[in-house]
Structures are given as structure tokens and as C-alpha cells.
Image 1 (cartoon, one colour):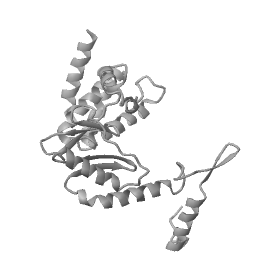
Image 2 (cartoon, helix red, strand yellow; image 1 turned 135 degrees about the vertical axis):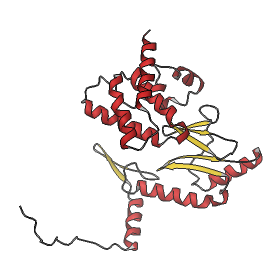
Image 3 (cartoon, one colour; image 1 turned 90 degrees about the horizontal axis):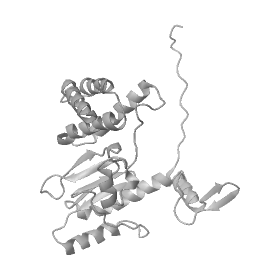
Image 4 (cartoon, helix red, strand yellow; image 1 turned 60 degrees about the vertical axis):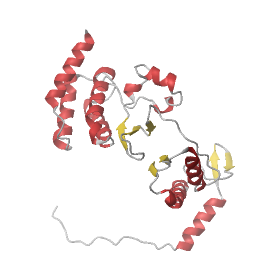
Length: 265
């Protein structure tokens, strides 16, 4: 069919005043009802998860709190993803640390409980699948390494050591990818592998990308049962199509062959 010059219909638009938005927010805050089976329940305080305004109000509250934290600029390093947040406050002594933490916490609603978190290993914290590590003497300079969850699964070392030493970590240790013999097409599995490798490399600081890539390849080969020859096109894909020119597939394939043969002896 030949293209036509028929004009497109105009888009329907509607103007909403700020007064209307404020009225909607107040109405939602007053009538916090949800249905559970045959029961109609009313939420006493806050908004239930899934409410239309829940995420927006959470983000607005966090933006407001972070605006108040401007007085800590220079001694604060934070990473936030929606409502998950990791923060380091630098202080020269314990008294200054307590004062800064008290000021930091006072920026949030009094109903929130914020407590210090111990590092996972040395000067490394676990946050949303990333290891955030101190890499220099600078108190606010850190690097990120994507956390290889399958490698840390309970059936394999060093997971037993982690579980016995850091009992708070099991909630963040889980199987994140399907094994090679799972019931799905090879194309779907290949797409999953590429997606995870890209996310892993992009979320890791450049000096540590080669290390994390090697751990992922060992994970696929030794833990998830991937065939070595299926990893070769993944490496060329990363090198040629996604800009990771430092990857040298032939060298990695030879190293994997030596690893596999050594592990089978």
C-alpha cells in the first residue's frame, strides 16, 4: 500500500492544576484502604506497597532529606537506587563521627531507624549485588566490583566461611542465573548470559573488570555447567559489539581449557 499524506489525529491533552494534584494527594493520604480477600482494611500510617503514590512519596521524602544533608558535603559518600541507600560518613574521631551521624539521621523522619552496618570483608560492603571497596587512603574513594552470587552459593567455597563469619549475608546470596541444562532455548540462555555479563562489567570499576569477568566465566564453566565452546561467542560479542576491546577471547579460552582439564584430574 502506498504511503499517504493523511494527517495524524491530534493527541488528546488535559491540564491538571497544582491545586488538583494537591487534592488528589490529600485524598489518597486520608483514604488508605486495601482489600484482602473479603476484608477491607485501612492502613494506619504510611502507604501500603503498590499504592499509586507510594514510590513518588518515598522519592520525594528522600530528596527532601538529601537536600538537608548539604551541611555534610565533603565528608559524605552516598549511593542510592530508589529507596535502597548506602552511605559512608567520614570523621576524624569517634566524637565527630557520632555528631555527624546524629545530624545525618535527623534529616530523615523520626519513624525511620538508621543503624551502622558492618563491612562484609575488611573495608568492603555489600550493596545490591555490588561489593563497594575502599581502594586508597582517601576516606571517600571507593571502587565497585559486581558480586558473583552463584560463586558464593552455599554449596561452594568460600560461602561456608562467609555464612559462619557474617550471618547477616544469606539474604543477599542467591542463585541469579539458570544452569546450562535448564529447560529453555539456547538462544534465551545466551541472551541471559550476555545481559548478566554486560551488567556485571558496567557496574564494576575498570581496574577490576578483568577479575570479575574471569570469575563469571569460572562460574559458568564450573558451577552452572556451560560448555566451554558456548562461552567463545559471548566473549567475541562483548569485545566487538559492546566496546570491551581489552577482552582477548583466544587467551581466555586457552585459560578455561587449562582450568577445565586441571579440575577434571
